[in-house]
Amino acid sequence: MTAGVRPIRVRAHAKINLELRVGEIGPDRYHPLRTVFQSIALHDVVEVRRRPGPFELTSDDPSLPTDGRNLVAQAAVRLWEATGRGGAPRGVAVRLVKHIPAQAGLGGGSADAAAALAVLARVWRARLDPAGLAALAAGIGADVPYFLTGGTALGLGRGDVIYPLQDIAPHVVVLALPAFGVSTAEAYGWFDEDRAVRLASARVGAPLVTGLWPSSALSVGNDLEGPVARRRPEIAAIKQALIAGGARAAAMTGSGSAVFGLFAGEARARAAARAVAAEGYAAWLTRTVDRRACQRIHFPIAPSPARRA
Image 1 (cartoon, rainbow, N blue to C red):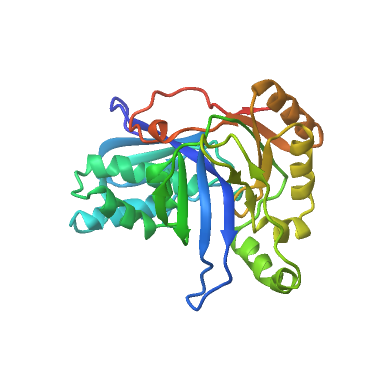
Image 2: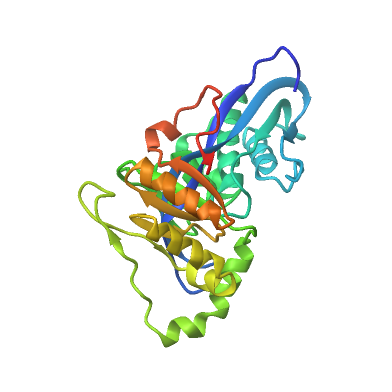
């Protein structure tokens, strides 16, 4: 980026799906979803700097595409067009500092796109109200509208119709990641392949976890977990290790391959993370984040709040 021009730096928080219920595929070829999203402290950093010339996207991760395949680049194009400007986007350079693993169900690409939208809307003085920005976000990706809200939220439809919920009580989160990723297409493809299995046996209800919300229990579970774990048994092994380590609840997040455990205290969470890491899996210690923290625009640069065990 151009020297001497101070960038706007924004944290793009990862998410976990506390609950993910998946309906059978419809005539539109999409699965209707009901999910409860939760922000966590693990985050990427999105740096936006004003500068003359065409839009530029770079990243500290050389494996990350920075062309039109990247959701941030798509967000820039859509917002530029929404402002009524002609031609290709201009006037800013965006740099992504990546901490959120890819193909893990943590929403890193969508979080980056939402953070970029929020900042670029100010830089380019886009005349969009929150509903207009959310509609623009939905056209980029189903998860992107959630990241404009953050905290604890209900997602319906394709996960893009967002209803903020009361934030859950703070929890320490252990994230564990096997050596492989799972693409969204793979997870839903396996879900469809296993339709006969689902119809032959009643869906097992997810456990209710009390104390997450002040007034009610939360059902923690993921309908994609079974189909993925049948092909990737490491998922079930990680989940069992987290529960054995004292997690109040554990589940795969999104389409995987990350598995999270919710812990009431840091000491037990740290011990569980070390145990998971000893089995050869990557493990991070992080925390839940409420909506108010997610919706702040400017954040000071700080070390990543997720620590490898």
